[in-house]
Length: 178
Image 1: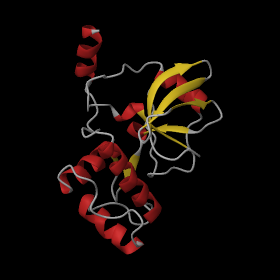
Image 2 (image 1 turned 120 degrees about the vertical axis):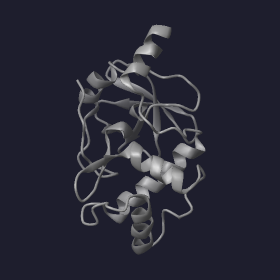
Image 3 (image 1 turned 135 degrees about the vertical axis):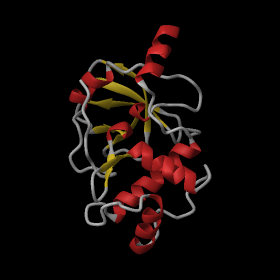
Image 4 (image 1 turned 30 degrees about the vertical axis):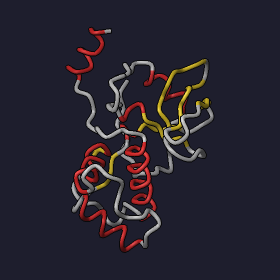
């Protein structure tokens, strides 16, 4: 059961975890260091930062904070979204988050973002125009750009530098090796 959610960086309506549990069950984890699929990196409404999916329990997910490495449960009442399911609006279509993060990484040469996420809206929009020139200026808000920058910095600080999703052939190879 695969769904593609077209959402801005910090979506207002997020999937309920009970629906998400059905999707997570089908994932195979890539344990190669420094290469973690964005599908296993989660944003949880009401909890600061990003989380890596570790395991699942009865009616909950076990997640680990990328910031302090503490493991916490995410219950069915929590609203959870995978970074792999997020896209950024452009004038023509939507661009998957992994492509935008890769563009930021290329602009910053793999380092932390050179712009502060607390910058003025005009500065944030100018930065976003450098990263994704045709982003939809009406539907992508400064708060979305702030979230993008803070997520990028958290991922880089956690050592997650490869944002490209795994191909189905790579997934099959990983499954056969296990």
